[in-house]
Image (cartoon, rainbow, N blue to C red; front, side, top):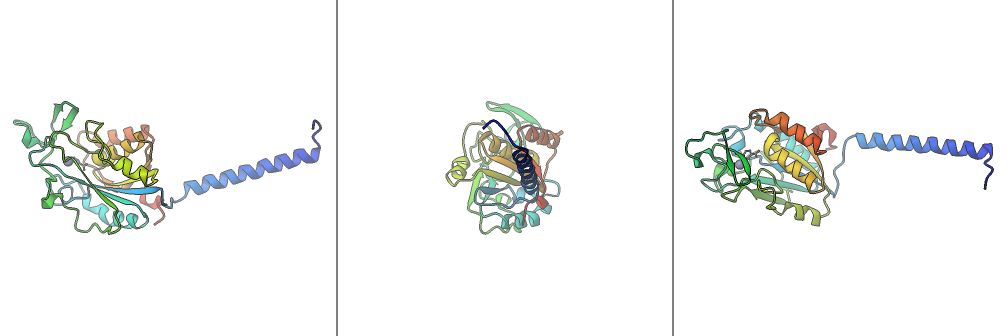
Length: 242
Ligand code: VGL
Ligand code: ZN
């Protein structure tokens, strides 16, 4: 102890250099395409007839994402599909609030609610999945928004921000810790799902080019701002190794 020879110092500095190089290599690998594994899930949000061409709440260019959603899904062992699944006369429908029009808001016990055209009523064609969605290996279909008095954009929690859908427990019991979100709409159900995923302790990614937004009164930019603040990673489908 005490005296460090020149040779030892050299060895230390060489060692550090190697460590730095290895570090850089690991970082470079992390920045490359992501290979989804057993701890990852793809959540395919609300790719339903009502939100696509001819639907009552059609998201602009919503249909365009279907081929890339199908391709991405093939790269994931774990896929969960969500369906917006409202009762007739649901509280989120403008038609349930006399004098109100779609895209206006009302105050409800759980906060401000945007009002929508009637959409995704349980058991109707509009609530069905898009005909070209092809994910036979999806393990769970989770329906949300079935409580007549509470909306649910998020796949995890209803709009009261406390009633769980059960997805959190399902994923955690299966060892999933990273959530990748695609689907419709970027600024509502996709964003709320990704934000709740962060709140519940998951790493969360939104694959932007496999989503489309409604963009009502700046909602798309606001959603991205909120997601960025919450640590949701904004990536593109080329960032996933398919
Ligand atoms: C959605 C509005 C109302 C969505 C659902 O899937 O983003 N948006 N219900
Ligand atoms: Zn809805």
